Length: 345
Image (cartoon, rainbow, N blue to C red; front, top):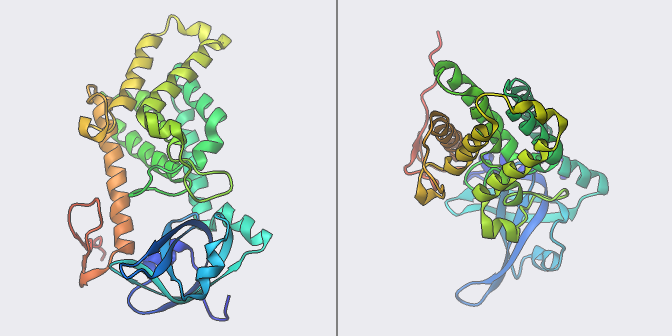
């Protein structure tokens, strides 16, 4: 890193870059490489760099020193990316920019994530476990606990989406934790809601994404699986809940559940319904529509957190067309306007 050049995460670089050149260094993985050519036949590489916060692409033209250096480099290589960066409507551009391999110690630190992201996700996971500890229905409490014991590590490195919102390593934990906070608050306002069922539904609504949007133990690129492609996260989530439920039925503790009300089979069906209906409409992939108070609440809590995350990201990455108005970012339907600050005396 050159003297005086700040070290930024990729998210920080994306939010700080503008039409004014920004000199910076980032530690990132080479996450993707596609060989392309212009209409005139000039070859170039479209390179994707990723860290724990986000990813972005840079072009390396055939006459760029990095073209040959990165052409055969193994994907997943840990690099220091340094240069002068600008941002326009087409994204981030660097001129000039260079890369150097990270040391093993630096590569380990990169995989661990930047301190801010680590601290936030650790706090989110702690909140998830605290909410689960507060579930009073012994069947739902045991099911949620069994899930974290068996799949906690995989859960913690899964994204909530492939793009648009929480599309980063650990993003599903962030999404679930914030949804649980919202669900818990809403359950206090609407006492007819079954709080235990709603919290369990939040935990499991996207659990199929552990096979659709998971990251490897040593990388920032989401893996692709035939299972995820052919089945999708909603059927996978329902299958997982059924499998975990069968696991618990073999445990001695479940022998005391036969007399509980509502009946265990009814509890299982209601939880499966939350997973099946949480997208809210058939066209967005739900095989059934919300038919219970908890299903409606879960759908809106999910949608609210996803939308507000997109809005937050858009303010950080969009260009201002005029002061206070930001370019529309898909899938948001309109340009964003700078929010009104809170009143202060």
